[in-house]
Length: 300
Image 1 (cartoon, rainbow, N blue to C red):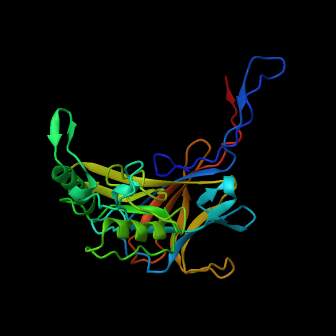
Image 2 (tube, rainbow, N blue to C red):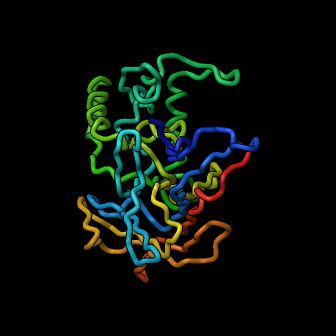
Image 3 (spheres, rainbow, N blue to C red):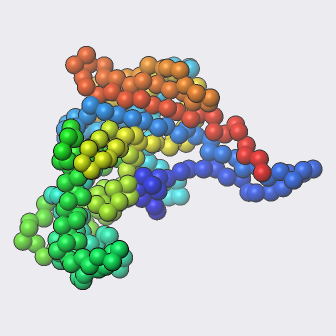
């Protein structure tokens, strides 16, 4: 299965391309669920306590409240509810290894070390040694964690995964590191490992997007995450996030994290402003829901 923001799962329902009787038009039925585009700011990696996560809910015109699951593996009949906010990438990630980046590579050398690059390469006519290649990765991670002028590290919005990354001592061999990380990532298809070469396409797992992040040096702006759900929310009246523990009881939901106020949207778009229910809370955001994607056939 594909990974990453640039390779987000899109659950389209396509009818076979057949000529319509009596005309030359071809019709493709579009995705019948809901595409949800969010922004969020005012959060940190510790906003949600350890062992807890966010859940997304929607209220219909009948006052029914439905739980919105973000990750679906329809081919295998699997889904994973819940969302979490984590640092998108870190120099301390023990599983950011060459065995997960380079094809047919069984090694477990950290991408921040020269050992991950067996030989020098030439890019744009410039020779780069293994030490220089490793230093570029280190510099890139610093750009996303502590650049001048940024309010904090880049934060990723991810499917909820209760698995805890392994603790791998610096003295571990590459084989030992690879074994520990394989055991960790094999626990779930959504277990996340950041990719310093392309932050939108993780080495392992999936990413919905990122909380608002702006840096001046180098110039960068990340702001938004997308959730595709097969649940049709055409009649949605409200959405809200709650903070939940390992188990979720829809009849006894946890405390509110973000609540919504419907605002003016565009054609076939339902728009909400999001804010913390706590007057002292700093988390805010927006949500734009495309809910009529099944009603506009594409004509050829």
